[in-house]
Each structure stands twice: as C-alpha cells, then as structure tokens.
Length: 327
Image (cartoon, rainbow, N blue to C red):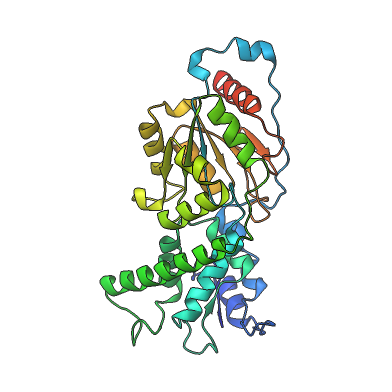
C-alpha cells in the first residue's frame, strides 16, 4: 500500500531527498509502510520536544486552600474523549487505513497499493491536526488529491474534494464504531471513579471531543455507560463547532452551556493540541498522557499524570485553587 509522507514543508531539500530515496518494504500484512527516515524530522515541524513527560503533582497546603475565595472554586470538570477516556489512536488509525483500502485511495499512481498511515506518521499527524476531515484535507493538500473508486480521476473542484472527504470519513466512522462494539475497548484507569466523584459532589461534568458526534456517543455509551452519559451536564463533539482544537471554540462553547466562568473550569486532556485549546479558552488543564503524547511539552499544564488512577476530586480542587491564586 502507498505510504504516508513527512509533515515537513515540501521545499525542505533534505527532507525531500530523504523521502525520495526511502526504500519501502512490505509488511507481513502486505501493506507498504513509510520509511522512518522521513519521519525523523517530524517533532521539530510539530513544535514537540523529545522528552518523557514527568509525573508532576503539585502539592497545595490546606491553609492555602482554605484562604481561597469562591472565585477559585472548581465548578466544572471537562474531559476530552480520545486519549483521555480511552486510548484510541490506534483504533482510529486502523479505521482510516481500512477506509483507504475500501475506497482504493491512492495519492501515488506508481504505488503498488492504497494509502496507508503507519503508526509513527499517524502519531505525529493526530498530535498536530484535530478532527478526521481536517487531517485528510491537509494530507491530500500536501501530497496530491488521490485517485479512488469514488471518482474516476482525482477530484479537482472544491465540491468534489469535499465529497470525497465526506464519503471516506463517514465510512471510517462506521468502521470505528464496529471496532468499539467489539467489546475489547476499556476506559482508561481512574476515569469512571473520578466522574462519579465529581457528579456526587454536585460539580458539573462535561465531555468535549473533536471527533464525529455519532462515534463519540457510541464510545461514551459503551465505555462510561448510559447512566453516566445521560448525566453529563454538557456534551460537545466536532460537529458542534466550526473550528477544531487547538482552536478554543469547543471549550468556550462548553463554558457558556454550563453557565460557568472559564477560570472555574478544569480540563482533562492528553495532548498539546488539547492543552492549547483549553488555555486559549482561559481554562486550567491537567494532562493524562498516552504513549503517543508522552514526549510532548506540557509546561503549561498545572499537573501531568500517566493516568487518573490516583487522582481525586480533592486533588483537582487544590490544583485549581493554587493555579488561580498564584496566576
């Protein structure tokens, strides 16, 4: 299958030469995977730093907490979905590659097979561009609009390009749902416990995801259960806003729907894209990273965790109070 390509600008001579000379070898499944040499430069392009995100838990004294006013109270906890409630990057990648194969999508006429996004490439792509359709628009814009069995020739008009993206994305979404329905996917550690603690304390609970609404609904119903899903005070997906993360629109909209001030919201994210969206909305953010995001720069997060298994509501209240008091 045709391989993914580097995210470097096409004018960078070194990257172009590396990509042009990369030797592709078929995998055990028959797919042709991209050469890692072209991906070596990706973190620089994405503004990521190669370092393991440390476990960072800020300790706040009881006296500092007690002196905080209601202006520093935690009024709403907002979860991202993919990467936070479940580790889903590999599931989305599988669904995209299945969709490319189903529709015969190929950006390279000389390639032996269809487009295939390998793990290293997809990790960098999904950590730079939020939402499925924006990912495909960017990729096809950089690498040429593909041939497929949707159109006899690569689309040239804007309307045909959008039609291709819509059709592939819709099929990919249904494939992703089938994977979720398999029963093999579980929520990340500590998620359900923290959700229950927040609701029990009367604090508002929300989920904001850049993914397609129908797939997020299925994901939430399957992983957190109908009762918790129906008990959410706000649920927003990529369909509900015009701009995707790192644009802050989804979190700004959530604060309005929840009827709370942005400074009194705390967001749980897994990537620098989500962190930027939360900060852009004037919200504090904690990070629960995944293997594909662990090396990103989370300096602006108020705390960083490998998962939520040892995180309590009291921890989050103290973290937010300390963040707002110290600025």
